[in-house]
Image (cartoon, rainbow, N blue to C red; front, top):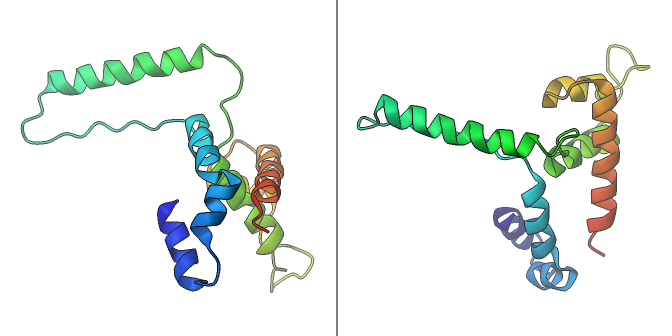
Length: 139
């Protein structure tokens, strides 16, 4: 997020980006939304890593995942993917040059691009992304 804000500040120095972020409470909101994003674990193996180290790390990851899955229901939607889906679908959805009736981004294509289960799931992501964009619009 910091890199994005730096880029906005460089591109538009007339906008007091940092003041806007502070006024709108965006850092706190970002932090709380980041907690909802599913964690992805990686086990780094170096020269001195033993098979037991890898097995222990794997056990810890699986234990954490089991605890998370006990909450039930579908996993929460990832806000960043939702925003990307909404932007592609609403703002970068040009007509296909080969067939003007078709659009570049359908729900099915978004699902394929972002590894979502279905076009229906992609539609839900687009709707969530629109909501996030609407609520965080800087005025």
